[in-house]
Image (tube, rainbow, N blue to C red; front, side, top):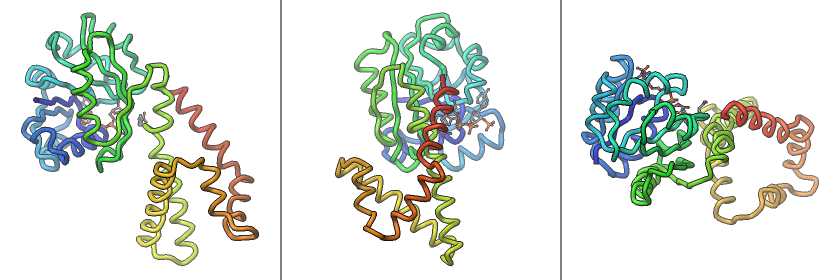
Length: 262
Ligand SMILES: NC(=O)C1=CN([C@@H]2O[C@H](COP(=O)(O)OP(=O)(O)OC[C@H]3O[C@@H](n4cnc5c(N)ncnc54)[C@H](OP(=O)(O)O)[C@@H]3O)[C@@H](O)[C@H]2O)C=CC1
Ligand SMILES: O=C(O)[C@@H]1CCC=N1
């Protein structure tokens, strides 16, 4: 299968990295486009895929196409490629706020559309992607898309109304987690730990906690209680985090993120 990517930036290169690592397609079966020459050369070098500056060529030469430019360029890129999109081609989007209805209107003709929300852990095969499709997408098409999405992590079909919530929960959340880990590492450095070691300890603690929650299916509150010894160290940290509003801060941040994604 020939895969196309219009826009090969942070998100698309993470997805392509995952797809190629799982050998779902060969690097030469992927054709991408980017605006600047330096960007195209970088992606060719790093990923071994073919790059062009011509978005229409990407559409003409591929069967399944990802539209991975920033949301503000969606309208102009769709206008540019609309004539070349073929009836049997599947177009996969990754942008927040671009609804199936809006996309359909922009194309002005029937197009098989799958709206997704991936995240950058895709690069290491640990992505979380939500997707929903319009009525022109057949079950077989959707299985093809699911196979691709699962090559770089987990993929789950959701109702379209949940897509903006997904942006806050898994699309954007790696950024909050990296901020948290940076702050934790800073504190460890303040405590005397060398920075490189601090990042390793913090990353492993976060990774281990995520796997623990996933595998045991225990409530996060129960897992938190398991760490807090009576009159111990952890409960002191928990008290300060409550006082500083960690949980309400996160909920408030995710609320504005979700609103922005509508
Ligand atoms: N980053 C993330 O964590 C996530 C991003 N997304 C979504 O992914 C999409 C891309 O985001 P991201 O990868 O972060 O953005 P980047 O800015 O990293 O990448 C955008 C890419 O689009 C290219 N581009 C810009 N204009 C055009 C054009 N007219 N024709 C062809 N290519 C063009 C850029 O080329 P050049 O480099 O040469 O300018 C670049 O390759 C967005 O819609 C975003 O919302 C979704 C989930 C998570
Ligand atoms: O910040 C953004 O708009 C994109 C969508 C989800 C993650 N990055």
